[in-house]
Length: 428
Image 1 (cartoon, one colour):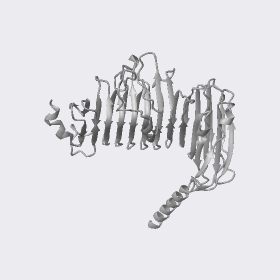
Image 2 (cartoon, one colour):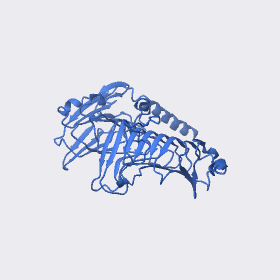
Image 3 (cartoon, one colour):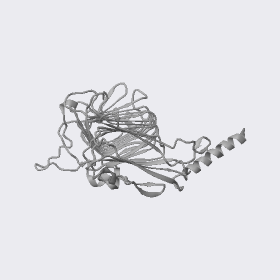
Image 4 (cartoon, one colour):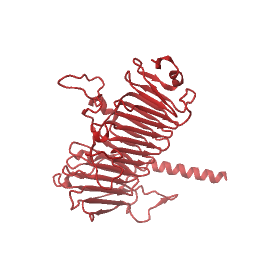
């Protein structure tokens, strides 16, 4: 029995070592190019069977968008030259394998449905060499999709690999959807201009569902130079600062800008929606207009938001856009946030709120725990660290609401909330 266990462990370790060197090993590659006849589709579907590699999406005028690192080497996909001076969509795939004969992937380009473009990508269909049932040919695909400036598509991606959207002023998207058990995503300088449509009951400007993959919108390092949420900016007659005024438009010039457009009251309010089990969800340096943010962490997936502005300036969203986060045991970290309302529900995850400004006086910041009638210091599985501007209103509740407000104090370590709730400082 012990011998069998040793063999199994040894084989497993051998595979892990093999897989770790997979990226650096010399591969045989093949490049394929496709250009659709329908150059202005409203929806682009991309379904890739590859679990290794990256899907690059950028503007048809941005050659830098299609540069990446693959196998430890700098690789540039020649996609832009296929766009006919940024007027056509272009698709390029470089597929690779360690074993000769398995490098050619299969691409199906489907334009049968009017106004739709579909790409289905499959690995080589032959029997690849295996190691304990695992394909050891290390098949991977680097895919580039160039979108011209005159196309604003809905992008629907199904994959278990990496999606990388490299935004620019020449790339505008209508919607983004990404689904895959291990799918991960990085989006920088993304511009999303959502409009409601038929057969869209959930009104999702963005929907990402990945069990294990990391999802990142924006780059935390960028906020140092952009001033996306400028707490110290003074309001003048020539340049009024309406960032903290409820219902009043304001452009903080964040690198990532997402706007939801609708001319009637609809339910649910259009949103960015994320679902994960154990993958990281990060939103940084992002401005949303008339959109909500919904995050569901079904297990230990952490949620982090930094430098995010979320305001409703229309009666159709009732002047109340919210950040709504539901977590089981994943941590929640919000830093430098401006939103109409915030609701956080957690069973036993850590919650940290720092520099948070909530604008709608009829709502608040609500943190709900899943254990105990009160949040007590001895319940170490639910901990809060808060840093608010003075006189900010926020709520905690389990079965009842607590309204905590103090005219001077702006920092509360709510690990000791039981003491705080019963101190005289909150009875003023």
